[in-house]
Image 1 (cartoon, rainbow, N blue to C red):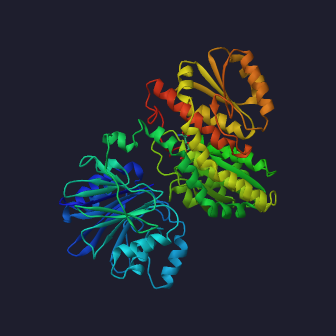
Image 2 (cartoon, rainbow, N blue to C red):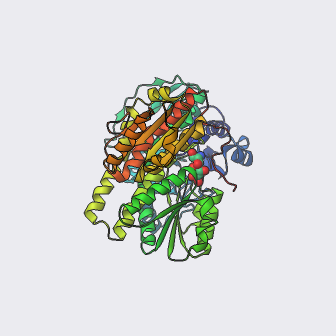
Image 3 (spheres, helix red, strand yellow):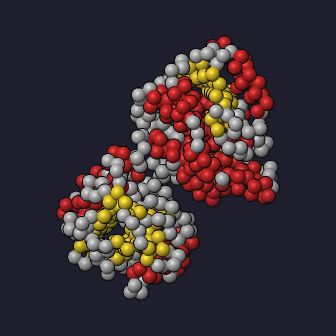
Amino acid sequence: MCGIAGYVGRRNAPVLLFDMLERLEYRGYDSAGVMFIERGKIRIIKDKGKVREVRARVKPENYSSTIGVAHTRWATHGIPSRVNAHPHMDCKGLFAVSHNGIIENYSNLKKELIAKGHTFKSDTDTEVISHLMEEHYQGDVIKAFRKTLGVLEGSYALAVLCVKEPDRILIARKDSPLIVGLGNGENFIASDAPAFLPYTKRILILSDLEYGVVDKDKVEIFSLSSGKAIKRKAESICWDIKEAEKSGYHHFMLKEIMEEPEAAANALKSSKELRRIALRLKGKKRIYFIACGTAYHAGLAAKYMLESFGIPAEAAVASEFRYSTAGTLDKSCGLILVSQSGETADTIAAGKAARQKGAYVAGIVNVVGSTITRIANDTAYTHSGPEISVASTKAYVGQLVALAQLSLYLAAERGKIGRKELCRLEQELGKTPKRIRNILAGNRIKELAEECADKKTLFYIGRNVNYPTALEGALKLKEITYLHAEGYAAGELKHGPIAILDRDVVVIAIKSGGLLDDKMDSNIQETRARQAKVIIVAEDGGMKVPQVEPLFTPIVNIVPLHLFAYYVSVLKGLDPDKPRNLAKSVTVE
Ligand code: AGP
């Protein structure tokens, strides 16, 4: 997820665009840049770093132009660097492009363009777009734009400048947001409204597979399929800037929970990298999932997924593993480091120790170019986008979807499942984004939170692949409500914890859609017999989830538990985005 901002009108564009970018920084912040047309040339000023750092370095006030486009990056292809920062230009300086999304066929397009003599400067997928424009341009920039869009696969929100058309910006979108802010004698474009809210609240929404041309007095929109002009009514925004940064949600955490369908869909895009990792793990005798906190719970779920195919695997917290099992590793071992930030000190240390022992190390990471990606032999990105809230939600969903794919591919590599079963399970997994969307659309979680907010302790219980779900549900509640919560293997209740159950305790029982549910039913009866309030996560439970392949139940089961923790936190008058004592990334031991 990146932030795009554009302007055409009477103000000084380079300065205004950095103002606009600062209000989009929650969409991405590893590098930033601005392009504008000055004295008949496209100028690009950009660098690695947060928007304010880049602004101080490139000094936009030293330039003068009334048209430009800016971009703040969340890297997906190509590490954060000056060269990979947007915008990107073609060979001749005719076009410059800023992009938010993933061009899935960029490597083939790049090969074809190089064969035609184009030279590339960056490792990004985006740069192919500027060279395609150059390739397709024969005097009509709109025709060249439509032809370029026609060969792109994947997702994009685009803003393009052409030096031959110095008064207008070309825009297009497919599966990534882009809106136009309508001014008087000036117009704005942005990924999100906060960028231009101080200047206008009148907007024009660009829909998927539409492109447009924006100049200071006019906005034209066209359908990509027909090329025909589309009449689009202007709308008005009622949010203030703070609300708009959260897309109208009160907290980033709720916004990020609502982005879980997109996080699941984006994680599915890393199948190629995950297949490569599965191939490298094929011959490994010992497999370990190593992580901390929420990421550890994802790794533990992956252990159960692999074991369901008869493949032995272990999961361990990095802070323990690095001082114990790491010393027993050798080249017959494979480690999968799971991490949202890619900067967690204990996980990095475990990975380095493993590399020193000759073990194979793979990373399942969200932040492109982070430290773990540099110590791992291979990395698969979850592409969940920036996760601003300290409590991890959408990144966890992205990790689970990536690890579920990895489990399927490794099972296939080892002959545990055939092609037909692999395809069936991949199709099943592919339904996850829609299933999560349905859970978010219809649940009485808020009411359940109201019934539980004053309880003294909550027990989350699950079995097998949902034991990690119980641990994660409890962690989420602890970290943002400060209530006492325990995640427990349901079969363990009888071995002690059941002693504390009474009417002041809530038990959240997480079922697995058939897998061991008869055992879970007995555990539920045991807890009810002690007057505990029981909430069941199941198709017919108090927290409703769809019936899915048991293997994939952790992915859908965690969604109501995220919402539950969020609503309890808000009911207690807390700020779920900034819980006390916690940091987003634990970069020290
Ligand atoms: C998640 O809600 C927590 N903030 C924390 O447990 C986190 O998952 C853990 O610190 C690992 O972080 P990482 O995924 O960036 O490595």
